Length: 403
Image (cartoon, rainbow, N blue to C red):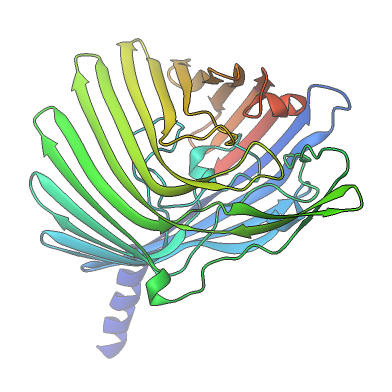
């Protein structure tokens, strides 16, 4: 009898566990001369999940071979968390990706998980978000949810560097010599923790949420020490992350075939870079906002239009950013061949600099498990937003197998 009981328990464990994942190969080439490869990688993710009564556990491990960015090659734990679900509340502890906001392809209040810009914004947003080691507690009501997040360990945003083809050389004037110290990151301590609180309310035909995030800026401020030496100017960069508080608000309202969406993030105490290489970052308050309209006209069409901007309060002429900036996105997609083929176009446009990024993509589901994707990423216009990547206009191909 004892042997039978053990066997039953083993079957029960197997039934409670789910193992799945995916393997993806990606390759891209510059359209402009010299037609170099910009992306060349094999990337796989193995996922294991299990539920035991009121507990649910999840682990995902990434393995990647990247022939263009050596630092990406290796094996890494992407997420690993344990969740307890009770009547009216739940709690999750461990490494996790936390998603806020309602915008399409743009992060306004979605700033809990820092971004990974290894390949600028050409990766999907699901790949751009980095996981954080956090504890998340939620109170779940019929009309109101309260979410509290504690992040004890700081994680910075990832920017392209070194031999990465997405790392651009800075424009340094003549007779200026530049050196840089290591980035000064916050030490791990209780007082350096990050804390976020979000309250969401669900009414008939209207969802709203308000939040506050006491955090560190994911990107360091590039403080300078400037000295003159025999007709040359020496600039010493000292990167440092700073505390700031972000207040957020978001809403969505469906109506007929439309969904109206909006997000606002008010940054209290954010540092902005100067226009001059010899200038100093300035601490300002700023408002980041976005409004969007989703339209589903039928016949498997989807159209999403958004407009947003940043307003810097108490603006000074020495800042690199304007007092007011304006940008927009348009995302159009259509499903064909019994929804096995998806054609889409996602356009980002910077109004002031007239810079743009246009992603034209096709995705074909050979089977439920095997998807083939191909597209073109076009960068153009002027300024320092998208136009500076015009040489990285690329054609790309991906194959993804899920199991």
